[in-house]
Length: 628
Image (cartoon, rainbow, N blue to C red; front, side, top):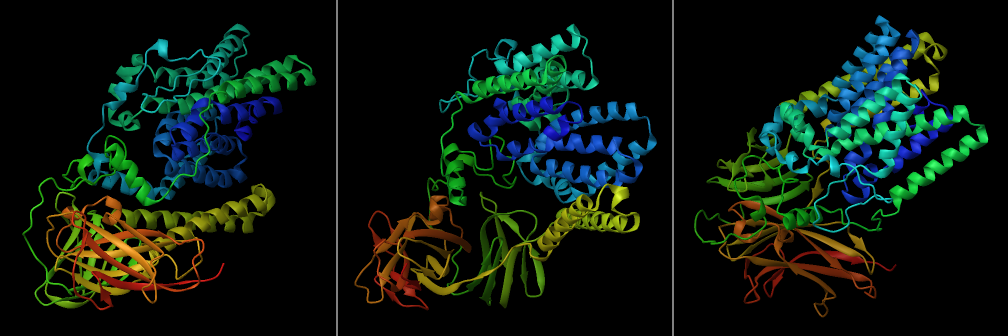
């Protein structure tokens, strides 16, 4: 913000604008109250994008290519960081550029802006092309929601006059996030400055207009505008997102007020005024900030737990990321079937061996003389495919959860099931890759031909070129390794009462120390429809089976998919975390796994296993515990 404000304001005014921008309440709300990290990070790009395009328009001809490349990269960063923020910001950038281009009155500047926008479109193709083409596959494309109407406020609720900003602190309280006393004072003083003292710089008028219009969009009076542009604005979900523009504009106006005051004051008093303003804004914004240091659980299990508690699997009330083929109620996805019944298709054991797993990939060996079913514990989405018998077979949605499934014809051999690129993802990524390579190498060629002095210094130009080439490398790696690395599994292949198979397991490492946590993932395969919910367990014993220093029992898959929801042929990963005692002696320890009925605490009998089995449990592997 300081860099952008410095284009229009003095040093003290730009400093005030930057600090106020960082500490205005809605900026803090995104981080400390809402936890909206993407929207919070988007704040970094707003002033940088304005600065880059301003420099592009006003730069001499020799440096326009450099600033066009920089502006394109920053604009793309905003879009991929938080597309909704980019949507809100787009009219502000457009009007700012129209005013600036009108002042410059040169075709070269317009050409530079056009080039930058073309670069940005090409760079962001890996993001926007799949969004436009594939949004119909998830809730996002099922039409705009009218939920924004519930969050518009009356003019009396638009501002809070509390001397300390009233952050919502009570859980369950409907948030409103009003504008605060600090912003009201800044806007009021700006009106006096512009219309009372006729301090009518175009930037002051521009940002005052942005502040007033963005504040207006929070109110019920703006409802006709929301309804007129509902097809686009409704995707914002919450009108309060317009406060991002209010923060940007009022921060600049705070700097403009300081700059105007400093022109009439001595330097010492100017800095004293700036310090007083910043202290006042800081006290108002931070006094009641609900700051509480936490160590959140960032695991996938924690995310699913939050969704289950809120009954909102798929993100927020609209389920925008839930595939449209899912027909089960969102609140019920993690609950057992109300009336499970046995029957249906029963699969013979031993058909499938799981040899490797990746982030979105499964490597298997299949022996199915009469064919079989393979169902992944993943939502079906275009791109899921199985390479089987020299053929690529797309997945189909199976059951009310719309899991990715494959009906395999008779045969034997290796099978790879993975999430591949859809056509729009592939072409978008290729387009972005070519664009980043073209721009990056083009900058290097221009530097070599024109010399660093003509384009504004070699260091900055080379750094920008390096950014483009690093982006190209990242896109190339994503094409080469779309599913990440593949981890080999340790085979178990145990048949438990012809109901489920324990195919294999993985651990997060091979060697541990006392006090560590051992993460063991079991891979189950359902052989038939189960009529009861079973518990899974992992036990840690010494080699002689005389001690059991650690164990974990619980619902498979963290309880997010009870066994009554397992479909015949479904492969289900099931992670257990075992805490090693701090005084555990070094040595080799064994891991055992199995399932049991919760009501009777009876382990399922092991019909067959490729590893040692005893007492209704099978040996899944060993770990080494070393001295600390």
